[in-house]
Image (cartoon, rainbow, N blue to C red):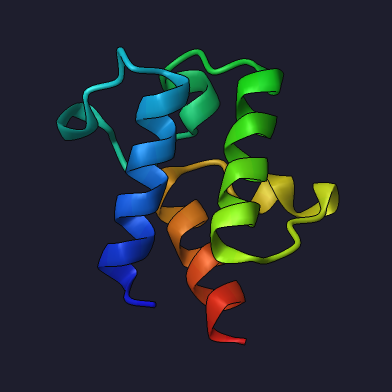
Amino acid sequence: MTRQEIETAISKELNRIAPEIDMDDIDRGEDLREEFDIDSMDFLKLVTALGKIFRVEIPEADYGQIGSFNALADYMAGKVAT
């Protein structure tokens, strides 16, 4: 899976969870939960959906590593590559 495919999947799920988010306005280095006021349940929905899409396990202990769009894309790229 390419980096672009990963980013597209993340964007699609973010838009599904928070349709008011304009993907062009995302600061890809900022914490998504703070930047767009995503609560813990929505973040969990995002992580769960991405885990299903990519068929990977995302343990709760790793949530601190996936706060920003870029960090999430990097994390998923690493998981998919293994």
